[in-house]
Image (cartoon, rainbow, N blue to C red; front, side, top):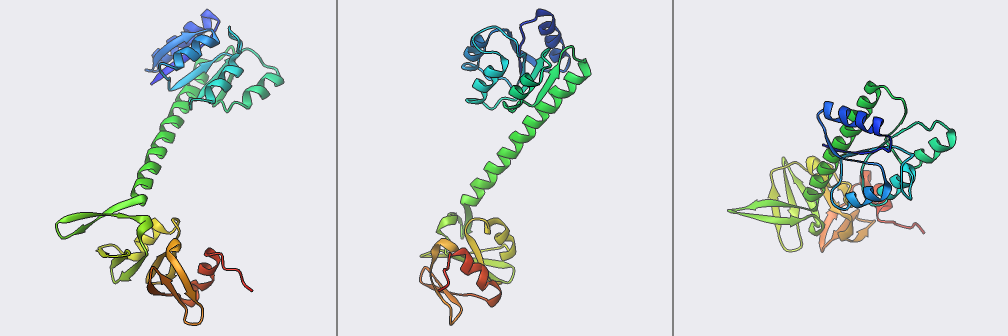
Length: 243
C-alpha cells in the first residue's frame, strides 16, 4: 500500500513518514505544493493521501482534494491545525474519509489510516464481486454433449421447471440445466425476468401478447401459462394500462 503525504511543515512531514513506515506501508512521496502533486498523480496513484490544508501552490489542500476527486478515487485524510467551522464545512464537501486536528496523537492517526485503507480494500473486493456477478448474469455456458454452448441471458425466451431440472428455451433451441427453477430465479429475477407461473420464468422483453381470458402469454411464438397468483405482478411489470 502506497501513501502520499502532502504536508508543508517539515516536522509533521517527518512524523507522518515515520508513522507510515512503522505501520508497514510505503511512502509514495512527501510533497508540499499542489502542482507537484497533480503532476505525480499522472504517473502513479497512491492508495491513500494524507493531506494538509495549508500547503504551497495555487490550490490549498481542500481545493486540491476536489481536483483529485474529479479524476481519481483516492481516499483522503485531512490533517490540519485549522479548527474553524468554515474550514471544516469546506473540507466536509470533498468526501474526505477523516479530518484530524494538529497536534494529533499517533494512535488517532494510525487508526484513521488503517480504517481508510480497510474500507478501500473492502470496496475494491465488493466491486470485483459485482463485476463477477455481472459477467455471470450476462451469459453462461451449458454443456451440450461434449460441447459447452454459450447462452446469452437476453436471448432467453423463458425457463421451464422440470422437477429438479430447468429447461432453457431460446428462439431455435433449448437446453436442460441441472438446476432448479427457484435457484435460477434468484439469479435472473432482477434482469427483466418474471415468474408467470410456479413452473415458468419469462423474459419480460420477449413477451408478445397476453391472453387475459385464457390466462396465457405468447413468448417468442410459444404459449406460456399465467397463473392467477402472478397475474397482477406481471401486468404491472409490462406497463398494462387499464381502460
